[in-house]
Length: 162
Image 1 (cartoon, one colour):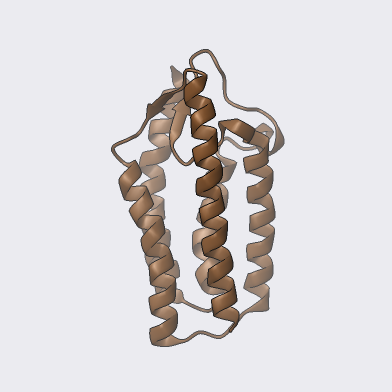
Image 2 (image 1 turned 180 degrees about the vertical axis):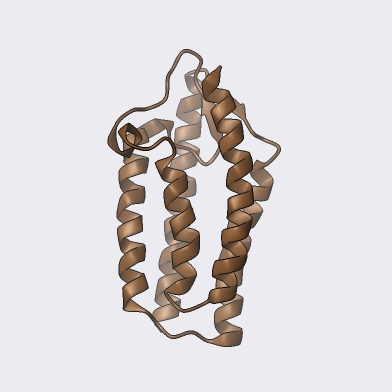
């Protein structure tokens, strides 16, 4: 029962993020934003979709004990995520956009870290499976996410260096 509640929450949370990203995308485009990194974006979407599928499959095949400690860690990571995303406001998106002449946001965690949202994603991908001791998903997707973020951060850094 815990798993069904958790995975349902996770899916709803991800769908709400996509809704917000879509709304922000319209605003960004109306304000002259240019999109970058289109080539890697479908792979990122596929990875995040397969991550949720992997959670469900591994749990159904292997089972998994519920961990309150990892759930608390996840909730703390989620709070950090909301701080990072709310600091970006309408500039946050799952895609890479830049409005010419606009500089990176430097408030909230962005005052301290260059890529706090990506730091959060690294933690999320590692911790979410551990809430139910789904070690294969944690390891495989942490590696895939590291590869994806290497590409994504490289593109983003080039965009902001212009």
